[in-house]
Image 1 (tube, one colour):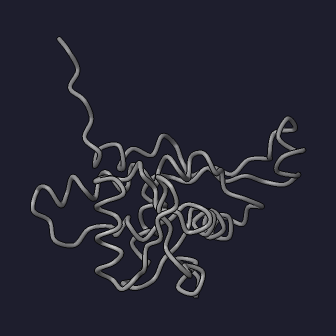
Image 2: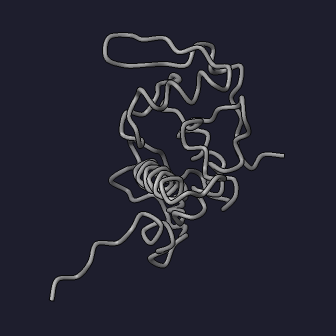
Amino acid sequence: MKKSKKTWAEKLATDHGLPKVEPIPPRLHAKWGKGTLVIAAPREVDALMQKVGKGKLTTFAELQRALAKQHGATMACPMTTGIFANIAAHAADEAEQAGKKRITPYWRTLKSGGELNPKFPGGLAVLRSRLEAEGHTIQVRGKRMFVLDHEKRLVQPGAS
């Protein structure tokens, strides 16, 4: 019997024993320095993304800073933070397709430099339209899109 594929909501709800804080592995000291690394749970990343209000923006780096602060760690794992943000975005899209009105505003989470994430649901066209509807100006550079002056509306979710 073939096992059915997990929904995005199920992936979001699966914690795999996370969060966990551990020392930064020696092989990564040159890249990340010494200290501790938090691998957050998917729902923690989603919760931070939910805190970004209309007209505001955040980046993966801001999510990482907020997670590190929340767990008293030197840094948050960039790889898992990105993966879990992607899961949160797809779970939100899945919920919206099912008729839910209030979803995680994943379009407000940008890559570094204010770049829109083409891997998020709907691709660049959907992200652009949602961001422009909230008053942001989108600049096209080749095949990539950026929010103009994004740093003026940047927030660290969860920061008081």
